Image (cartoon, rainbow, N blue to C red; front, side, top):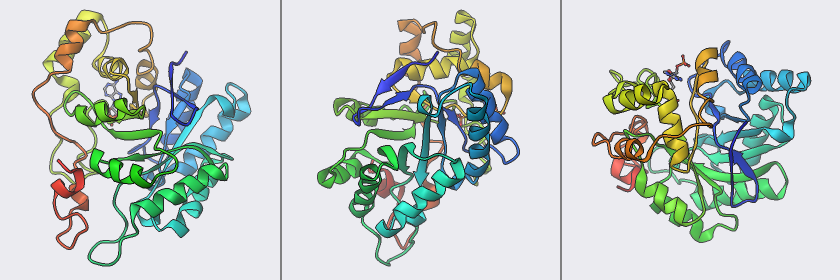
Length: 309
Ligand code: A2P
């Protein structure tokens, strides 16, 4: 019921994963249980989402029902900025594993190329953080490692000293912010790209402390026309577009109907002409622009420093 992609690590990643960023406590557990019962085999988590404990309860309950085995599901978590110090990495990973109630993670990502330190004090270099990530693979705590929110330049720097290449790069990607040069760069190197905020993250304004929501990708006329022509909803068009582009994709929902419909994307296609139209929308804008990391004292003084573009 799920397609998957092969990673550089030799493991496979199911292409549609349930996103859990912004899923509230009291809601996220039911969303995860619904998703797994509906056939989702990939759940995307992070320590900073502050809901891994509840995700873990739901995982344990669904595994106990016997609908699915641990080996059939793919669980991701992410190392938060304040744990970049190499000596802190393993404990951070173990804390996520404990909350998620798993004996290994399928994927552990460096969440941002940003340490918890603001200002001129010494930043733990990312190379050291990465070496500690590699040690998690050696110890069998995690199967694959990767990064999130990195530019190609930061990835190149990391790969210069990496013993284990990042298997996955998880970044914002949707028709209003395709992130195409990074996608092509990853594709050339066999690195798998996972698209977050595939629906344009319509609910992120408050979370990102922005005054208002950005333009609504779900209501874009090109998306609406494709949906009408194909007899699908806008969410399905955007998820299917991500799949046809060769990425995996993480739609977030806590609504049972939307969780179900977001997985109904495997037995039909967006025809080439519509795919091209969706791949060429002029409006391009990050929803998660990282401006919360910009600080005059460094290490990132401008968005240019952060994204290298
Ligand atoms: P809800 O959780 O109530 O379903 P993204 O994955 O880009 O961050 O978008 C997540 C947002 O989109 C959430 O507000 C979610 O709300 C909403 N959403 C999820 N699936 C759909 C869908 N198929 N159609 C419309 N909105 C959706």
